[in-house]
Length: 173
Image: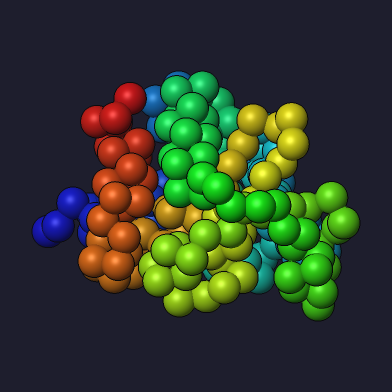
């Protein structure tokens, strides 16, 4: 079994564990329900609807890892800065007017990520900035890609893949 498939399987097992078992290492995760269907993370909490996919669940779990581990945040923030160096900020609401983004949501989208995701909206989402909040979309979108198709992720963007897997397996921490 490849390393990518093993990590993906472990994420799947974590997602279906009872809430009290969702404590990988020193990360605490609290799961709640959202009524409007849009999943989100807030510190150690993730809020999901019953209609969210497993990939979205994995995405939100990754946010809790990043928000509770300063080393992970530094790695993802530095990686985003490197990948988007020289790019100007763009309004997500202007880029995607039908997606419900607020005026303050901005991105430093990056064309190389489009190769990996096959989607302009997902590639711009990876570069999303949250102002003073210490969170990025780098790990969460990477985990989502790892969950969707680990082989394509490794093939299309080996550097990004190695960052995500290195964070998840602890080799970069």
